[in-house]
Amino acid sequence: MDILLAGHDYNQLRAFIAVAEFLSFSRAADSLGVSPSALSQMVRNFEERVETRLLHRTTRNVSLTEAGENLLQRVRPAAFELGHAVAQARRTGENPAGTVKVHSFRSAARKHIEPILAGFTERYPDVLLDITVDDEVTDIVAGGFDVGLRIGEVIERDMIAVRLGSELRQVVVATPDYLARHGRPEHPRDLVGHRCIRWRWPGRTTPYAWEFFENGAWFSVSVEGPLIFSDKEMALGATLKGIGIGFPIEDTVEEHIAEGRLISLLDPWCVAFPGLFLCYPKQRHMAPALRAFIDTVRAGA
Image 1 (spheres, rainbow, N blue to C red):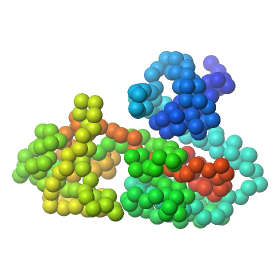
Image 2 (cartoon, one colour; image 1 turned 45 degrees about the vertical axis):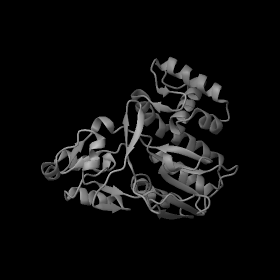
Image 3 (cartoon, rainbow, N blue to C red; image 1 turned 135 degrees about the horizontal axis):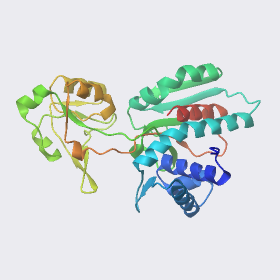
């Protein structure tokens, strides 16, 4: 069997990857220079060809099926490497140089920037990465940054946004000792009667209202508790001490749950959401140094 993709197969696969990254047909179509209707047909043809539904579509949202998520995770690194190789060949003689100013949420920096730093600095010795790491929702352009890494819900509408990695999920957790003393909530609204460890976006005055999903819609609960942090690691530390109930990202507490230090609560209402994105302003001619950084982060996602 010939495993090499025919031309139309590659175009359809490229169309699927674009939609899966942007989670938007219109934005993906804009990035590929085709109409949304043409892009939709390409993806539909691809689904028919692989005989599997890859995307959930509604009038407002696009999300990946389990099969689509698995396919994206397998083909995206190869597709980006291929694109990077072609781009490098096209830019033969160009040597990326200069400063790239990056603003990143802490979780994104740990997951997507730290792992690529050694390889990037060795490969591009003339590029200076100026990286600001905090969880403040900063305007990328007004702040003088070239690129940002953050969750999708706080990205400016006029930015190019490319998803990094898989979906994220927040989970309600507490220590066994806390639950023995205060009882176990059976529904998210029961949290109002509990001591919750709250978190506040840096630069904002009010704490984040915890978000849950029920009957096809999101709803929020304004919890109360003895502590409010602007640092998620400190909030997790307070949760581990049994001071109250926390609401961290699942992959930061998987080990604590597995080893019994924390117990996961209210799982049916804790639904995954599109996670971290790399975002940058639209531009006709991108500096080679910025392109090198973007390509490297995307390839490592």
